Image (cartoon, rainbow, N blue to C red; front, side, top):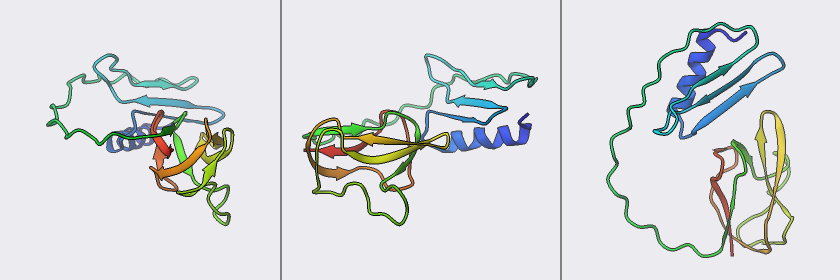
Length: 152
């Protein structure tokens, strides 16, 4: 069973990050924490035989941010993360990156790895083209649907 102090640390990590949710698990416990949204203010805790009182969740929306200037039009296809995890540009620290800016890729080529729950997931190019931009750094935590590469 996960103690309350560890749970508080996970909540603090989530609050201090740009992630929308995190899920941590092992053979005995599984915890999924999600930031509350206007549609669904939910924080879930799922562990066998755990009895932790539910804490109230505030659904107070954050103050509105000033409008950002319009982003310049982006050409080409974007490869997005299919999951939350840690982005790795290479198969191991000693090996070169799968792709660099200017490299040509074919549909199905491996472009990076995303580690999620200790599983290494190979991410492939969805179409052929040239890598025009790498939008994340090696070791960055990425969110679901976050742009990783731009292919032109």
